[in-house]
Amino acid sequence: MLSFFISITMKQIDANTFLVDNPIWPDFLNNRPEDSTKSNYGHALLIAGSYGKMGAAILAAKACLRSGVGLITVHVPQRGVDIMQTAVPEAMVSIDENDTHWTHAFTEDELRKYDAIALGPGLGTQSTDALVSIFHVTDKKPLIVDADGLNMLARYPNKENLMIQHTQSAPLILTPHAKEFERLFGTFPTLEARDEAQREKSRQLNTIIVHKGHETRTSSPNGSIYLNTTGNAGMATAGSGDVLTGIILAILSQNKEYQHDATLCTTLSVWIHGKSGDYSIKNQSKCSLIASDIVKNLQYVTNS
Image: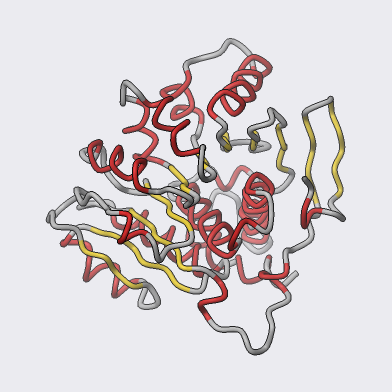
């Protein structure tokens, strides 16, 4: 189960709760063969951005590239094409039929070339039909749902069956902050009660849940919770979650044929995100930290 985390430092708090620090890297992050090409490191699809919210898509795409993905395609509305290709020239762009937001219903043929898919940053909430359709065609593709993707999922009446259907063939990762968690699963009187609900939902839905916040909690389908030990209060800033989505997308895209457990790939991504936030306050205050700093400092994390 521990896969590439063989040398991890892990303090066991109880039977199913672990405090995680000092992960080692999988080979695709720090031991690249000299004759490798971009095709060795995955092709990611990011569905993100809407009119007035293209910044979220840019942050997620840059974070994905900085975390080692070989190729990324970003699906954006027509008004977002010039913005994306100017801000992230390394990214390819898939163009929606709609001018301002996501409407395109992807087919299995269109998705076949991608190794992992993420959706949600800056997406807007007009795209519930497109969201539901992608759950039906992402067979065998890891799927990360964040931000507005979670908000649309929360109001879909058959959401739990939709999630269970996907997890029969591939990992599903949900990345809610506190309010998004409440929209999906309800409110709880104590931290302990919320943790237990998170465990139970991961078990019930066979889904990885990343509850973002202080000591971000990543729960696995077996009910274990991994508490993150990196990060700081400066990361409580707009766009920080979009960066995390890009990192998770990159790690899972490089994790071809599931060499490594998806929960622990996600846990590593959370650790990387927090560690980059810690590098970001070495020479500035917490209150001055912005999400672009986290992207910029990923270069130091993956070189450590």
